[in-house]
Length: 139
View 1 (cartoon, rainbow, N blue to C red):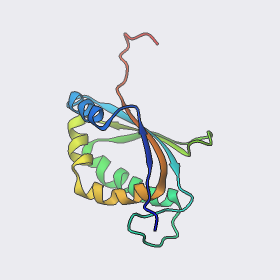
View 2: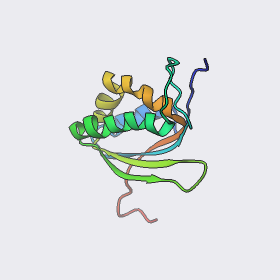
View 3: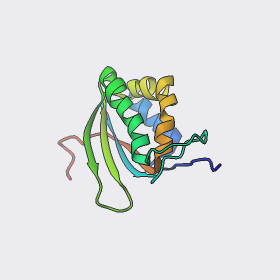
């Protein structure tokens, strides 16, 4: 049985991301996510499923939005279907700070366990973190 892999692209390395979170320990930041779903979900343990990739990833997404985000003060600020055939979905999530992200997402065992649905559903993802520009920065 083939092991599912997700092509996770990023504008930074894992080390750079952790450094970003540490530097944002007390600052609000945003995660920008672009997703391409599998036609059929593909679980690492080989379980049979009738779920589409979108449905499987939705299990993870629903858990975050209903269980994790309210407790940590995070919120989805943009959620849309993409017209570009390279991607299916775009989401922007506001997090209150890097410390909360580290403890409530990266170190949360329940989030890590349910992430199997995210991996089963996604064919590809592009994820980056950002801070809002201040008003004194010209665009």
